[in-house]
Image (cartoon, rainbow, N blue to C red; front, side, top):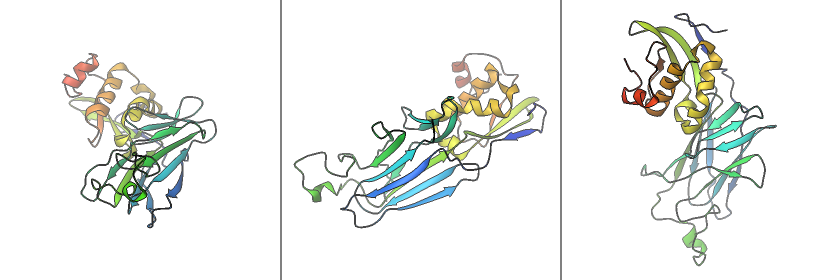
Amino acid sequence: MPTDNAGESASSPESPSDAVVIDMLGASPSVAQTPTTALVPDGDGGMHLRTTLPEPGAVRYTFEAPGESSVVVAWDSSVAVVGSDDELRGGLAAPVVTDTTGSEVPSSWTEVDDIGGLLALDLAPDGYDATGESADASADDTAAASDPAVAYPLTVDVYLGQAVVASVEWGEREGGRSLAVTPTAWGRASGTTGRTYGWDDVVRLDPSADTSVMRKQFLCHVDGAREKDTWNLEPWRPDISFIGYLIARCNPA
């Protein structure tokens, strides 16, 4: 069991999550060029999924939760795959879709209730429905297949993971004990889902960290300092309000 002794650390499992099964259903018949997909392990138990869409048309991904798991889509389009015990089994970051100019194309995950246990993303520029057809029923197929505001090919980036936190390690900082929390690649991009379930990872790795002061610091880093190499949590910080932690940039004296 992890302790709070300086220099000791604990890590999340490194094996990739099997909580999400990826099934690309393919493009609509009007798409001549096939989309390409690369799924690359990120080194800390997660995956980076990148898809290139060479020309307009609808491409749909489905993500299936295993066993008794279910998917929960947060307001920011991050996703949790949750077991029957309400424990996190895995998750997906909100999709990031960009065209060749670097402009972002709005997109979001939606839960497919009528299929059961599935999560889907229908990629289509604004003004087009999930099939790639124009939202204007009077438009012909040619008009539906192109959007002058979007420069193809599109690149779709999604991070998948099974843990928000990769490891925790005790050390010394500012003259006192400090727990260095290292997030996973998915944890940095996990949005509201990471905020909801990330603290459970810390407590699982070191139960002694489970205090109000430490939790407030963790949430403060999740909200405003995700890109820091480590999220440093000190048990000796004052137990003030969460707003106070935000004002003090997570480090009240």
